[in-house]
Length: 624
Image (cartoon, rainbow, N blue to C red; front, side, top):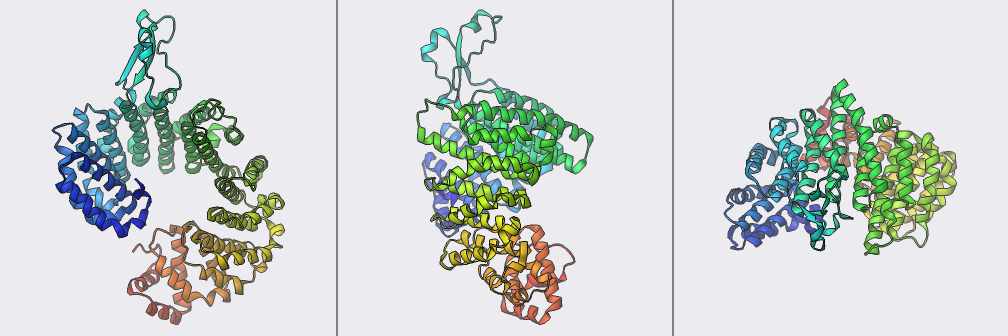
């Protein structure tokens, strides 16, 4: 449903929407209408999140009826949709609201599984358990034996599998929606008995495939969220899920891919906390197998979405586990070679001449290349700029091909963004590419598309920061270009990136920047509108100048202080930056008490109280 993408924009419409949905649940005689209302309620929760809390008690009153009263098939469908939406609510409305219900949800789910003969009931209960594990974490340990038992039954189950014999060959439908590329012969060799040798293929009902997939993904999520208490079930879960990497249905294979990467993350998290030899050994054993299987899927699987899932899983491991992935597997060259093959269309899934829908496949191919592009800056950061340099030179050609005048907007945005992130990861070694990339980024900041323009401004900023003297002699030209754009710019993200790019120039070499002109412009661009990641860049720069006693920042202390008061305690600022802001407030209160008092008098009592809390704190940051 489109409303789940509205995020906070749904809030003005939420009262009317919820009134209508609750009226349907309360008084509609149609089970189908109620089922759709419950689904819409889940979509609204994804968008509104804590905004749904005022309606939560009434929603749960209705849900408790639908979860327990199952007298016929229509009520069964209503129960299944309610379980699904209950999982969505667990992920959306916040810990304080849903946590008191978690144990009740788990016990209800276990009771259902003890008698469930419907694969849809089982799969949505598994998803509910996974959602609840985000809240309960290690406290789920008491229930894991039963939960994992049922999930593994689904992982191993052959329920819903129907063999088709050769005399029935004309009636065989192998996996609806193309889940199998070819018919699967389940006769292993000549030693199979005569009956098995007559098997033409098998089919499996989609609902059982969905159950198997959701059991896999839920196991992985449980492992990551529960941590240490999941370890007793890890080896068995890992062994069973690994076997599904050969399963012919794409959905099931994607579930296995997700789960295996999460098992590795689970073990790494526990090792980080405990430094135990046992978890170190488990990690050393698991990761080479998982990485090898992921790379094998990328190279050989014919389904693009499965390949994309494998690339994303690999990226997730590299991002969250980091250098141990490369150290334990020795796979740096293999990973980058595979990424290169994706860029140059050399994978099995990219070499299909008989594709029915060329446009759809081209879209999937573009998404696959973007997933591969996400791996590059992570690898650059892990290997270090100097070691990554030869690889960057190789990929540079592939990325520049996507920055031609005739390239699509999505290609340009992807290529510029990937180049920018990779430059930032490589650091000062990026100076080698200044002559090639500077004119490209200058051209891209004049693009009509907002996203391309925003990415190009970001790219220009990071190239200026790490491009050494080659870029510093161009600072005057760069600032003129950026401020010319700013004078007519209306897109919030572009404005955010102009402010951040200006900060990067200052941090690289403030002597080359006319601070008296640039610092006021930066502050005028605040608060950030869209690119909240750049708060780190903005405040690192401003606080650096303040600590140096820069008069150009000191003049703007009242404006900066008001800004900080509005941001403290919000989730838009990372914790380490919040700490810096607290320290800034404390130093201002000490060095400029009159200014501090004047600012407090000019803002609301809640924000003034935040400033006072900063002064009173020894360490930490306010959360209110």
